[in-house]
Image 1: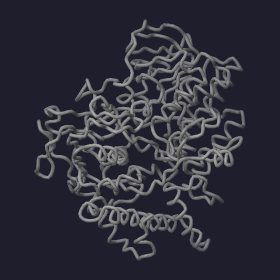
Image 2 (image 1 turned 180 degrees about the horizontal axis):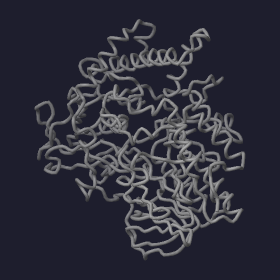
Image 3 (image 1 turned 30 degrees about the horizontal axis):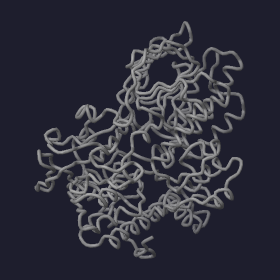
Image 4 (image 1 turned 45 degrees about the horizontal axis):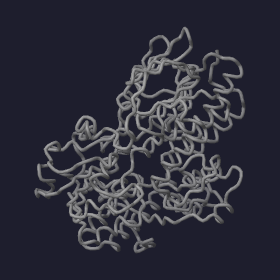
Length: 600
């Protein structure tokens, strides 16, 4: 790790001013509206290039549990329900196989940026040992299929299928699910895990449709054009090509080194640099794995990771990476404080000091590896958690190659696309191929993102019920929508550093509640209005969402610098942090009282 600034005095006021200056130059009046959906711009590019669609007859049967989304959420809920004896379980998935985001993200270099040991769910149940500390996408995708096979989740699955309508039938106590394939089947219970990153977006650039070369979004990588494979084979089709990558976020950090290796020329267009710390990826050895695992090992590792990112004082750091480094730095400063000085204000000051030190080292790393003007332009001027932290051992190094050019736009972004290429800083860069590493929609309306509304008891629309903001009990149940489960992070742990942890925990709750309802012969379960109201009020006593800070540089964490409105302030977690929620819900499940839920 670069340590050029370690121990040196940092002028906090000057740094705050610098951060504010860099933020201000990136603010745009159109905010998140600057992006367009992939489907709206290039409908042909939004189709599935990986699995042929198979024609089938509409489904009109009944299942006990239907789940919308075939990513980690649908898989872990299915696994837990199968373990609990619910055999007729159906997943509806718009892709051609299980995986969710990992089904679509097959771009070169794709891998998880949270350690495999805690990121890949159900490792203990499947007996799989990750091959690396940070597994690459093909292995993660194979693991999704492994879960599907082990728990027979393929049997009832509907792939290349999107839900268009979801309606509660009070008379029969079932959900009616309609899809774009003509399906109209029923389910006693329904779960939704459509995920926060599944609707691809493009920058709304003038002339984007006029480009005469090849263009695609990273989630629809065209290996027929580039050559190579998701497994990392050289992209020989780029050997004589000039390639432009628009975007320098987490996806681009993984893509750039591979395209730099194989393309004739690479132009990377940067509006805001990512903070790129060391990844230190390495293979995992069987002897080591066997020594650190045993009954309950993955839950122990996941909880240890949460503790190391929180304000507690865990005795060890099992993951020991860039994520936990910041937490350990903060705790070290808190430990040095006399107990009487450990006030919230002083702890926040310690957080800022630790962050300043960390970011100084990350900026020094860019300077040391790349150097020169490019090294300066690759420095991230914001707090580390203002944007998704990145970790990579080859991204910065790519800019030392003669064929790889950083086109920094000083916060303004690309100006427009022409028939021949990309215009930035008043200059046209002629290219053969444009790769849009522009990510996915975040924070948009639930109905917009999912593609359907939900009609609950008494004809109540979910869009209307949530018109003033999300309301739930434990982030999982919603009053007026019986037998429905939202498997996501908000109003629960809200743990974005390791998203699958949220899903596995919710899956445990779903299986617990459904098992009780089935054993007792109940037709429906939902939270009482009082329990839901008290839960939301309790959440609002906390510090609020940890993202959305408008003092940060613009990005999807803060709605492109505009912040989130009244509705979005409800997208928060437990006042005591992720560990507070995980502890609370574990005790709630173990009590067996299901306090707050009404069974009938």
